[in-house]
Length: 311
Image (cartoon, rainbow, N blue to C red; front, side, top):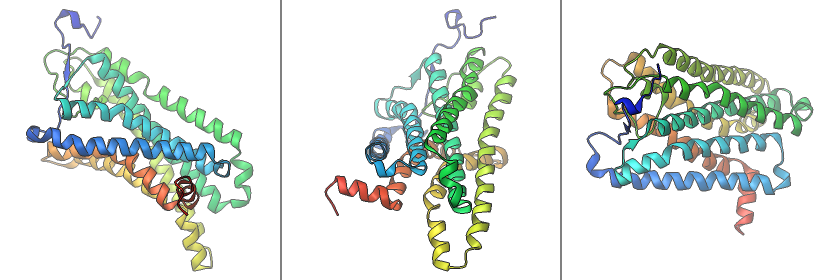
């Protein structure tokens, strides 16, 4: 049986929501969202431009930073415009096909960012634990191959999601829990068996958590190597090269882990808290990553200031 039979009286439109109880100030909430969106876009575009135009930044670390900026922009572009439509224009309706497409891109860029953070931890591991072989292992060709594998893997991993959502039947329920479409949110609206969706969604989440596990393992080895350095100054210098990446990992994974813990353990979950944490997950990493890397990475900071004419 064809499962999304819109023409036969099934749900033809899903409804997105803003922040329940604060509908009267949605237009004011849209102002900081718009500011964060524009700032994130400008920051990530600036990083991409500087890395592309400065030959001295054509190194593995900065190539990986470019991949992070691309995934941040994709995550922001695939979610925030829909949020602005809800908050600014009070237009919550979205067609099922548009919803499935959006959740594909949101989950795809989320997985891509997780994979990029994993590769960046491997980059830091090699630079600190095995610096003599760093250049021979992470060649430009190998970095390009890693980028392609990363992108293809992210696409293939989330590609089934919109199709297994489309096979479901949607009867009466059509109100989603966020101002954008997520797989786990949409599948709850189905009035048909969604066990396949639950199992595959859990598999995708498990893949992301495995990325975090390998990142933690990388930093255990990095910490062990750093603590073995005799000079206190050299230890701080080595660990300082990881600060930006640690900040990126925390801003990305802390909201995810918090949401998962609340879903699993909280007896009385606040819908408002859940919505805010989910919004933070989508808006804060694309905003903060370029700011942190521009402030903390000396080469990038100097190149940007040089372009602006400041010494």
